[in-house]
Image (cartoon, rainbow, N blue to C red; front, side, top):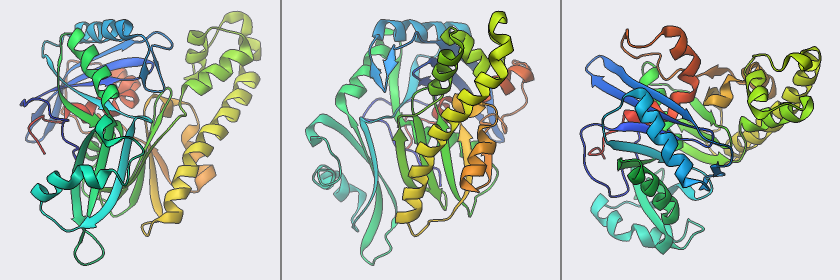
Length: 361
């Protein structure tokens, strides 16, 4: 099953540009969906200045708008309809059990039902839901409930509008990654799979049981922690530390101390990041009948940190792999293979969004 949380009441469209507005960069992806797969038409990336977005809050909207425009211009994207994804503390996703009813009946009662499960005033959020299946108990059904604060939705719609785009789909980042995962892996899986998308400031966790989300959580940890620790250890700029984090070299005058200092800094942060994520995985295992996680799939820019997958396996004793959301794309001469291999880990959300259609349910 491909789970798609529909748009929050925006317009209809046959195709959209997947626009991933992250805390460190903006990524734009445009795909052509074909019978045998998808073709990558356009791909653009643009960096955001530090603290333009902090823990999901838009602190410098003008810079975000400029980054979106730069991203679209670099990719030569002419389309004006966009799909974006939200995440963080202003987004709540819960799998709930309700008395069996029709979709129409649930649409009428969802606001009352939601009041019991979300920590916000129901009048301050946009709500959506997906009926997953019949519940384990007779006369019950499982429903995935999504609530996003209206001020967060407004932040996104305003920057998109100022950048000349029309928002037609508002998805959840964890589910966008799931869409990309399903498009890049063959066939259904019996395993319980933990999709872990590690961004600069936030990690999105989505645990799938029989292809359906069983547990979803966003936590405040990410790749910037590695960069900041290296920056402090070597007294270098954030940009230099970022290059070292991903396996490059830093300033010449500090190269003699790079191996030991970097290894120590990276190990310290890896233990912290992996610890935060595995606590959520352990919570799922302790509270769910579908408790045995068979695989961990890492995505996002943070997944590029050298050795992180090995450390994850050592900590959890669970097989770990990195996701390539472009692995099943149709052959293309538009992009250099080496470039696509370099940027693919960053594109899980963008590809998942570009696979969406505004008129789907």
